[in-house]
Length: 334
Image (cartoon, rainbow, N blue to C red; front, side, top):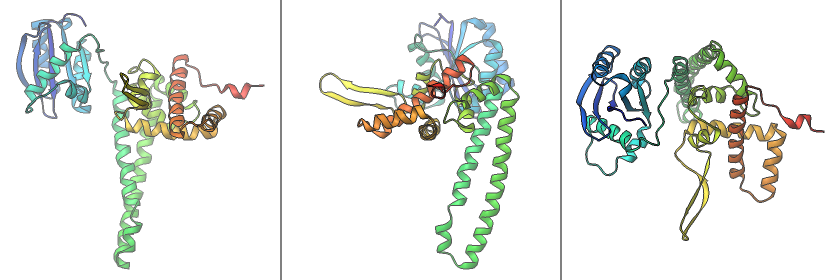
């Protein structure tokens, strides 16, 4: 990290931003400020900051709070100011023992985190508008799916209700389910329209689905979490994010735990990859043979299935890198 004149930490909430800043010597160069989380206030504030420090001498850090940080990230991107969009859990765990909590102290902790970890952190890139739209629509889709499960699981309840009450409840649920399915179909159409409207996205979308086992929903979610394959350098890093990369658990001569995955993961992506792996080991000859051979040799089925998840991610990165669809070499074997 270069020697910035101001390392600015920002705690983001729905309505306001708490801001503070230090220099590379950990001296306060920007006292605590509170501004509204709006385009006009953010623009006005950073106009003053740039006039004081210069745009190239500033780095800004804030927690990933979803859509609440969009105005800030968008304006920093437009101004060409370096910034870090950080995991809240990462910052929380780095803070050590602390008593109490306030937005002011959180802003300071974020700035201190950048100062302490400046050599290992990578600057963030702006989430393009079409990726953000996909993310918002996907979130809505997940809510509808959850609601469908809720209103669809009422058979047991109906058994314990009087006939008339049960019929009325069943009629209401069917009406709600019909409406939810209609909106689910509309969201799926909107998602596909956004992907088709972007040349790079539709190319990646088709390439991902050329990998055996992967369908439209997994392809869409991979586009979202990788920001169009700009957020992760390789398949291993994405596997870590998805919680399917194994890590050793050993220390000295007394602790010799088995190699296993970590519970810190994107559970949605992990679930999708699990379905892809189950599908691939049935329809892909190479993966089916790999699974059967490993299990026959005494390997745990879940361990082998996790290996297939990893193989699928590596195949995805391979087709994206080559910009060529996946080719199943078994089909050309003599």
